[in-house]
Each structure stands twice: as C-alpha cells, then as structure tokens.
Image 1: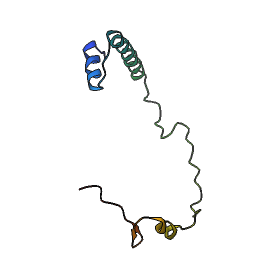
Image 2: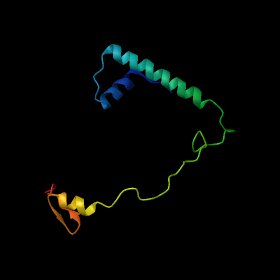
Image 3: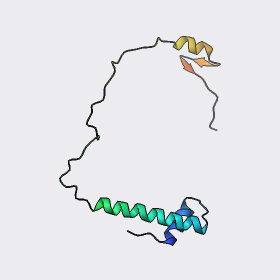
Image 4: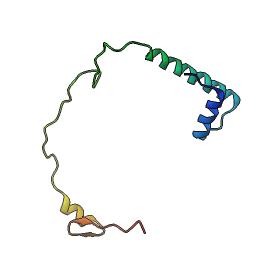
Length: 95
C-alpha cells in the first residue's frame, strides 16, 4: 500500500489540520515508513503461532469480596440540599 500527497491533504482536512509544505512532506514520509513496516509485518508467516489472550499468560489475582466501608447513606442524605424517599433530588437540567 502506498500513500500520495493528495491522501495527506485528505487526512489533514479530516483532522482539521493546516499543514505547511514541509509538514506535509514530513507527514508523507512518516506515514509511508509506517505503512512499509506494516507490510513487512504482514509478510511474516504466523500460521504456526498460537493466539494468546494475554502475552504473559498470567492469571489475575483477585481480592476477597468483602465490605470494607460502613453504610453512610443516612448521614449523606441529611447533608444533601434536597432528598426524598432515600434519593437525592436535583434540579431538572433538560427542558
């Protein structure tokens, strides 16, 4: 896959960028080298490589599921400017 200067102009327009001629040529060179690297990686035969869910094949250490904080619902509701039936009341923001 190759990229042309007109492609850089389209990308710059979509990204809402205003590029100078120098920046345009630098971007063209950078993107062309990235695409060349992608083509090299696609050329590698990976048919014998087993897919991995995670590169380290480590299991996640899980913590015990226990309550660590006390219930402060009533205290917090008394601090609210407006509450009703255990719920915080807020002003309507959508008309």
